[in-house]
Length: 124
Image 1 (cartoon, rainbow, N blue to C red):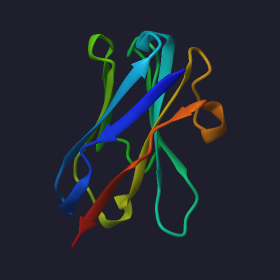
Image 2: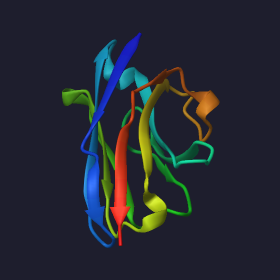
Image 3: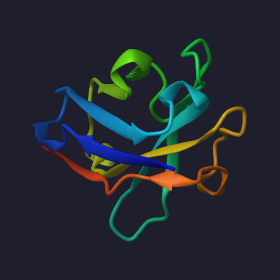
């Protein structure tokens, strides 16, 4: 198993930036594809971005493409989400997720392990 702990959320003004981190513990981190999802109040959880085990392949939701960047440091057992040009629609709880490579996909059901989430609030 792998345990995931997110951090880095907070309150930011529209147009600002935040960087989320997700630290994994347990099994070898490089065995896992990683994803970020988010859930806004009253809405379903949605895919944000994902990265394969090596970091070579990344995928983004259209809503964040060009503004968000996912990366990972396998030596530090950490995946990052750099969020720039934040807008009000980015307000949500952000979740980190993991699944054994090569099963990573764009759906929550593709992932076995989840963090507890970190709140991101964008103000006008």
